[in-house]
Image 1 (spheres, rainbow, N blue to C red):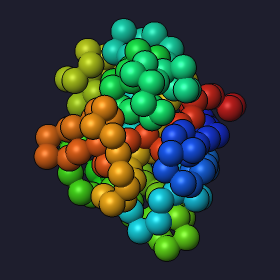
Image 2: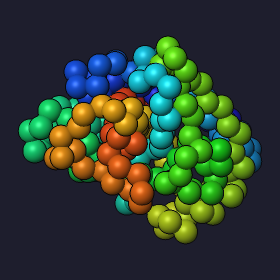
Image 3: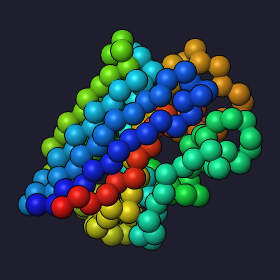
Image 4: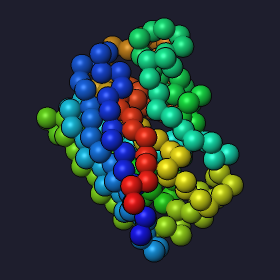
Length: 185
């Protein structure tokens, strides 16, 4: 059994009006990956995309900070996270093993901005799909970061905030929290 944890801290809090924070735990046990995420103080009543990001070449990902705001609009958007965090890899949705990212099947926070997510994932299926997408079956969780995304549609965002994914705009993809995944056993 191998365990990993991420302490998730807020990102863009000064612009979105909430300081999202929480924890993510990952347990690899034989043929299963159990994922548990608990978040507090996210934008209320909002769907929150959540994923791990990383580099396909195995380079260690880092969390984005205000330094990544390269266009100086006061927001760290999805595109600005890529140089330090890599690309979106595995979603934490209703079926992470399918690696289907743009859709509406992610957790929704309650009126207090709280949500919890737990999923037991068939590791062999996830690894097979991960290899198809990124060339390796090795998830390398300790080289990844987790992002929580999503703000209400009525939040005013400048046009400089990038992050359109399919039909989903930057309100859906704006990072609100981030954490470095670390091996803990």
